[in-house]
Length: 554
Image (cartoon, helix red, strand yellow):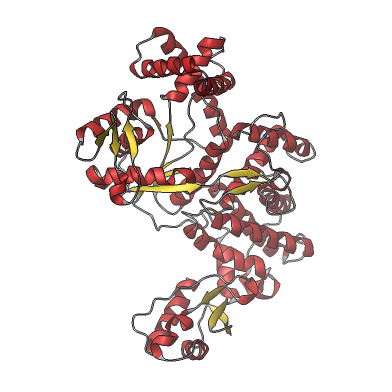
């Protein structure tokens, strides 16, 4: 592999000039014109051997001499060493991009990873946070799976608790229909408002909450059972649209009893305070949180303890990832601190991946109908807009294409940011075909697919010709294709790295496509079709890894 060859040559050169046990790290230059790999080793080790970084860089380059996979080595700035790969090395990567599976890694072979994400609550709406968690969790799941791990997708849903009681109260009070998921969302909103403004409603809702837990009221049970089923069925429709299939569903109704047993079994960890059972996080630099209320009802904290134990029983993974909002980061720290005291082996496996908030470029959080934006309403709004454009496409199923474009628009905007950062969502930009958007990547893929299909219709079989690649091939495309397997490995925990790779790849291909007639009737046409097919395959795999649909016609 070119990277390993360069790292070995540089490591040998460092040792030859007196560096003991050097650690070589190559990175990508900010600009392609500066090379394919760069190293700051000269600046890192210059002081150790008493040379200026620039002088050490010059000595290292002279010591390394010619490297088979490198065409040119340059020194830049204070002592960066830039490596430009040889055409033969780039050609090898492009040819590899024609194969399936392209870019698959083996770093995590033998590892078992559970990823828990989305986590909407029955009786409530599917909100923006659920949409963000789903996009990030699905991408992480696919990337980890593609690097060799066995992955299980989990969804943890709150089917008991005050939110349920508030919805049930409103259904009873106003005669709302529990089998209608949209009405359940409205019922919860009305119940939540009443809980804050009506003293009697608060008393009634608290009573309902207890009865939901102990299943002691037939009428409440009937509303609960119908509403829970309607909510879960409605969520499944959204998961299907987003491209997610879960392996495990966990519910608070099953984790709560477990959590209560764990809390009560460890009085050395949990203390009594004003009738409630708490964990004093101050002893580890955190804060106190309630695990059992004064009425002995379990809180979210207790349910999460039961969830951790249940996950480990059902499928003992090496790593258990939970994707939630950044605002829950401190909450998770307290949960983990408590767990470490009596279930350290399970606590050691848990990783919390957080996401920021989504804000809108228009400066308001409302849909076109004037309601607060939910994840579902945002999807619907974008599908409506995309439907108009889809009617002008070459796709056979305009409705399906509109849905695919809407999903791409949302997921791209979510995934292009590093984990934990807030997102400014701009509807127009998100749906644009002009660049920096999911639909732009989809359109680039559809273009490559159209070229390959047209070539097949003209009996032109893509045949890669490495002998002409250096002088005739698209260099920027080739150099970006070479990076794909490494990007996939890096992006396993940070999907934004893959997003920010695919955009310049699509742009480089579109630029070459605009300047080059691919099906020009010359002997080189077959080679150019093969290069196009390599880009097509890379975009297809990359979009799949991000959970973004790849329509073949747009």
